[in-house]
Image (tube, rainbow, N blue to C red; front, top):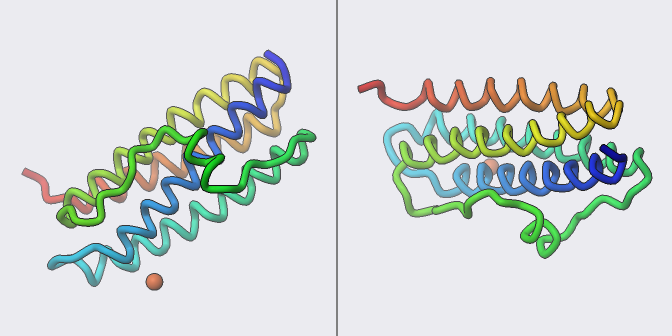
Length: 148
Ligand SMILES: [Fe+2]
């Protein structure tokens, strides 16, 4: 695998991470229900962390010598995350975000494998950190859902 395969995979990670950050911010704004007092700040902490990750991923693309995508039209082409639904119930929002972290984790895994094949340990290390962050956030979200 080449450096080009790594930067292409990273651009998909960047777009998916941005889309998940925006979806989380959408739900921070639009969530309604009994658990608003806990979900509103939890979603804020999660999109803050995602936007921080977006910056790190974009700057890794720059360090590898490519321009980082940074427009809604580019992100729409590169991201495969489902669009947010701002009218759904609070539980459906939490479940959608948990699934979204799983979705982005699979995009991250593809980039990690491309980086490992290319011998790009710095990118692989960044992706491994992202995987752990997505796993942890997905667990926190799942734990906020009623157990039945
Ligand atoms: Fe806010």
